[in-house]
Length: 133
Image 1 (tube, rainbow, N blue to C red):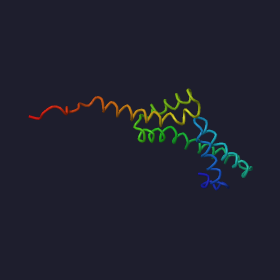
Image 2: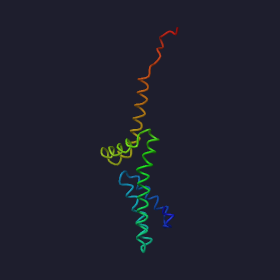
Image 3: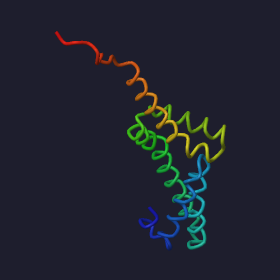
Image 4: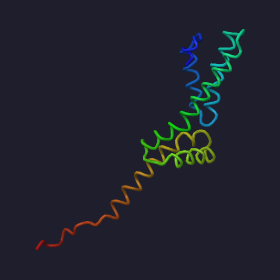
């Protein structure tokens, strides 16, 4: 998007913004600041361009993090998107940023283990001592 608007240093700004968006919950908003700030510095005569860049980035992030992201997590971990979002909120509340980052993989592993154990203990097994007639 920065290249479309012909913003200088687009690649380095995108890397910094991408690193900031890794931070749970506040990261997407923090990721908007560097591009808008650089646009203000490189185009001081056009502050509307900085506002447009920030608004478009906010729109793209909202679509990505609220619609696409949970669906990808659902496919990767076989969890419903609402379960993913709630687990991130609970993980953040219990363990802060690290909890929000690691809660979905831990929850995915727990679901897989529970399914495997349930299958192992609930499926009928053939008795090896019985004689076939």
